[in-house]
Length: 497
Ligand SMILES: [Zn+2]
Image (cartoon, rainbow, N blue to C red):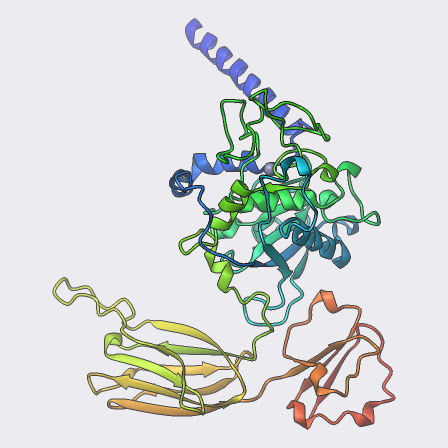
């Protein structure tokens, strides 16, 4: 009995000590970045992430294979509880500008490091096209009841007052919210898609005297630069440990810990070298930072090599023009999907999409084809025109128990039917029903069809300009009679024929 109570007393004291230690960590005002804390958490709880990280350490420090400029489409998710947190479009533009300067080496590096400083050659663009092919301004705004989001994944999840990011295969997600005790944090590559991205506190976001910052030392947007460095696998230059821990980069001098302010002249672990306090991956003030090294650039760019963790970004359409006709094609297969294939031909008889060779399963092992009696959905972005959808069946009996359907983005059925044919079936169809939307200021020429964009959903980025929707073909527009219309900013006029 006595022993038991002694033991629980000991446990309580231990627990108390742990809690005190944790709250010390949480309240440490010098802890500017929460990436390492999140990283440790993921290494502990996510075995797949852990294996991938171990593997990445073996990556050679050789130059990456991919040459040329890397373009990274960005979507900024503003999650706000009050108007101060709802940062303006201008503040967002200023952060993108800083990323483009720092990753494009626009700010010249100090001569003391000129032998190792390097240009990452990366560009950041606010997305112009969303995952559905619609026009976007690359900004989402979400009101939340949550007053604060700590270092975890809650800002990336609707159920906890946040918002889901866009696919990390195509976009860099930047979340802006109130994080409370750090300025920002990021996920390393190989995190799950649903939590990928960087998070920046609204009081450390962007650059400009007209915006709100919690601390003037961090008002030049370098929190963003630092977190994007993590997003591309860079560690802090002190390796988040003492002199016995390195950041894995050979040309950043090993530092005993983070440097604050602008401690130029302080000594690195080996006394004959200076600390690289100007490195974006240190904790120095924004105005002190101005370089990535060649080793850091090599590691970041490795993400875009053939099997790199972020190579899919290179083929992202996130900064392309909005899609033309976003068309959705569904096949409902019968029992034998392995017998059939399909192709889509344009009016010049060129194949613009096709699929086939579907998995037959294994008859001997009694494994049915995975798509048997299932549906498959495809999305196409088609210019106006006439098309032929062709089905082929190698067994010569079509797929009469199955069916097909093509719908427009407005969910209108363009063609549909059962798979009743023998060896070949051709179905012609036309897409030319796009809706048009004018986006421009009061002084723009709204009679000129060139100023009319394809259908897009209203975006808050356009809330101070006129938006006119028209449910007609662009060459059918005849708006000369509307000259004397008085339209106030933000008004929506629908012209229907
Ligand atoms: Zn950091």
